Length: 371
Image (cartoon, rainbow, N blue to C red):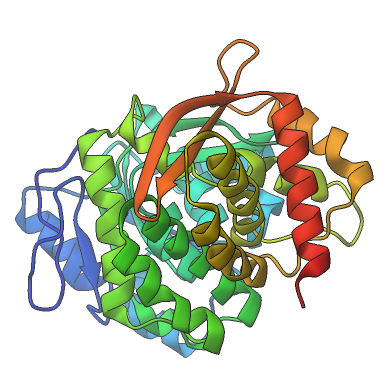
């Protein structure tokens, strides 16, 4: 499918970028599909995958006429369906309902559903158009934007996937009104990441919403999307600068993968990334000249976002084993992205097990000190 030469749209039609259209606060899905048709898209049929947590009259109102006329596959949320079984379930749904190469798949849910359903669309009949409708804050500012699709396999986070841009992303903040507190903080972690790697102003703007546990305003969500989109536009397939978006993810994915195997310790993606950012910020101080006094001001922000992450010294070898399978690695070197300053990230940095173990011990100690 490739890149789409369409603008991003806000209600006032202001432009954000050009990797794919993003519609914000349209109120329903229909205007986005109609705009795609007006731009030359021809769809023989429309299908939906829907996170089971998204239901009720609001969803049907958002779907409008499509609520009755289009087949719908309801799937469990979270990581439980982000695997080959979930992928095959979506493929079977499309086959059973006679989807063809001109069909459109609309995915309504959190980041995990957007990942697996986007992957299914990118591979079904060698690729059909799909629209991402993220319903969590994390999915709005991260998973739905930029064309990465993936599933988990072999106990590792996202080792199998594709780069495939959605036909559109539809951001409807009304979906966030009932979002639980942990899910809010999970999304805020990715917004903090965008600020740390690219905009100190954005970083400072997000902090009050962490302190008050509030959903950020639409404008701030839009700014976070714009930061990610600008990076993706310059490097859509992660050959260079897009690696900045992995800040916190090398260690974070290792923590998330390992804790998912420990009864009662599984954490949300953003929570693990916040812990990962703390560890990688420590490495940034050691290796990239990040000012320690400034890092000490940032650590409490990340600790608040990572409150639910419970890691002990005994877990470090297991976490590092997960990290060693990360797709960003090269030969035996472990790929990582770091910070030189707030708002200035660097990529294509490589570390080793000894340094990672030290960073994890530092993170554990900071968690013990944090009240």
